[in-house]
Length: 445
Image 1 (cartoon, rainbow, N blue to C red):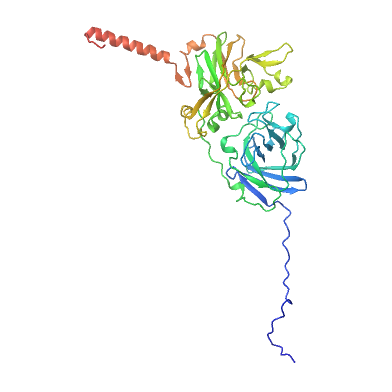
Image 2 (spheres, rainbow, N blue to C red; image 1 turned 45 degrees about the horizontal axis):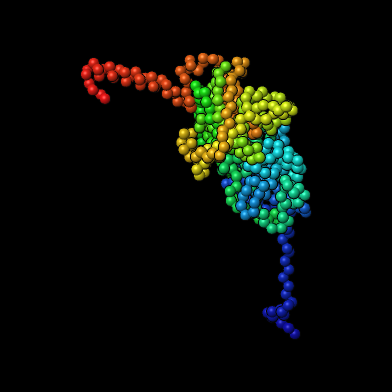
């Protein structure tokens, strides 16, 4: 008989501990943060498609772009294949659009940062859902891993890492992507394996982010009393420059007239003015091809418009027509650009004068174009100088009646009085001193 309380260990191999495996989650657990944690990207691969969720703390009039870099081992815009997602405030719908970036320039219908469909391709991005809440836009879309478009699309590898890029930016009037600021794009080498399932690096909710107060915009520059205007290209000045001054989205570059950022120019009816244009003359390089013209359009971009859209603009200078009736620009000179010496320091500089000191003028070989324009007597009170190939590079031309400028004593340039009154005062003072000296027989020279 075996005692009941005998403590005998079981024989080896007779004890079996069973465990229940944790079920694999069916919802995306992949999440990466971009752009100072203002963008969260979630993804999950489903067969031959990948579903991507973009959650971005952006304004209602901005887009978020995410996709594949144009180069391996580094972020590159040119050659990139991205989806541009946004809320369309006009149609009140969410959009996700397939884009290809052949040049770092605004889309002109042939090249630049363009929707695939606009340059003969196909929109391979399919919108699933969209939501905007508490300042955060969330858009879900899918795209195939392989699209069979060799030119406009890049394949997503079914396994292995690939370089990705992301950006925020404003939308233009076509509801297309405009240029982003330097702070609103990825600059690091970021890679994602879209076949992964638990790549989670998001720290918290976007609802906890607080939008910082933006810098104070620079006051608009003004030119009055000048007859010659030198037009070059330069940066827009970020949150102090083009967009806060005009209320319009920018492409990241703008016209600099007489070394001022988009100044408001005043001209008189019946007078002739000369524009020395250095915005680029190589039409094969859209990023550096900015012919100058004068129009009644607040937006510009005459050359990229359809015939119907062109009929809505009236051109006053800088455009001619060939024998077939097709328009072409007449003011395209060599390319001169005010370029950053290092990084964009617009946020740091309280005045545009200080900002200009952070730039250096770089000019290509060649000659400027010269555009002479006699202001029509029936010209409206407000016109615009613009870029023929791209939208939103220029600003206002105020048209006044003959004699107005002389009545204003030469006006001012960028808020500074014309030097002529000071010269007159100085001359009077010298004459007075000389008269006193003669009277007192004092030798002053």
